[in-house]
Length: 406
Ligand SMILES: Nc1ncnc2c1ncn2[C@@H]1O[C@H](COP(=O)(O)OP(=O)(O)OP(=O)(O)O)[C@@H](O)[C@H]1O
Ligand SMILES: [Mg+2]
Image (cartoon, rainbow, N blue to C red; front, side, top):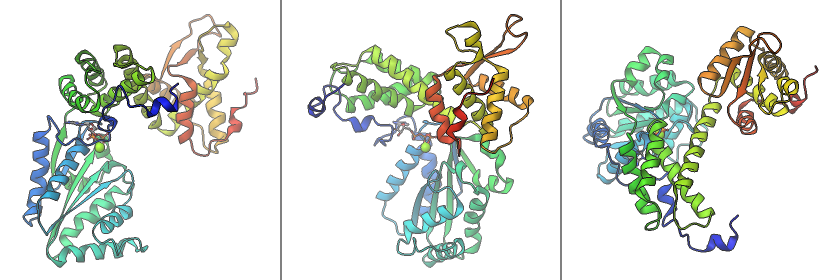
């Protein structure tokens, strides 16, 4: 444990911690010239006072979508022009049509916003403001897939162009979920996808260059060597070419070295940090499971902690669970939440999906124990798994923790 005194002493490891954070937007974005150019092309007409075409950007998490969009926004800020206006909207925060409209209005008409106007008023205010002097409004909707009433939002925003006599609106949507296409109204879809830009995941060599650059600014001289950077880039590439993850591993390994009082990052820290980051991904995966998958996994984590009947029968160290006891637990938890438990057929489907995700393993017991049954094993620590799930399972009541009657 580091003492306060140690913390105040200048770090032997870090020169500038902030640049190592995945939230830091670097001044230059390597390997993304083409993508940046595409975004510029979508925005260029606006700078000339013309309506552009809508653009839809997608690609895996950590592939640089947000960074590139922000980069172009910064560029535009430096070009003096009266008519082009930009709103960048993080839809994780502004996740409904109303909130998005309100955000756009508050970006450009701050005195008008926050007065509790309804959507219609906001819409009218916005359209007359655009018409006033032929403005072109570029609306960047990042993480657009999380908007609850997305079809309504797209419909409303695209309708502006037919409602106004002058000026226009260009929409740039960004998402890392391709599957959300299926949930969209075909009309919204065709508007959003007018032109499409795909961000490919980064290769290990690209990730290496990205973190090399960052390490040069973030670490003191000779703290981290090239072999370690290559190792980190390779682990992040294996997990899907995610630049954010490679930066997480990089900064985490630095923190570990510092906690251990070292003056260099060694392969040991890098290895541990990369395992740590992989875990992060797993818990994110758990947090985004559908409801009943969560409830089944939660039952498995609970039983794993209390030790299922298999453990009691065999006195074994490994905690395998009987499929039947898991189902019973799932049923009682679900019912205690005043929800309807799914049938065993569904339950078996959830199990095989949880297995495909690598969260559990399941196998047939063979004839030995209790005839022929399925045994289940949780692949991650039960407490951490439970913690992640508890945050999401709404109205979860502690009393379900009681042991089931035999
Ligand atoms: N080409 C690049 N050069 C340097 N750093 C990069 C590059 N691409 C990504 N990064 C770094 O990785 C981080 C994550 O990238 P970004 O947030 O742009 O990903 P994203 O595609 O928007 O991911 P998500 O879908 O999860 O939102 C950035 O903050 C930045 O620090
Ligand atoms: Mg993003």
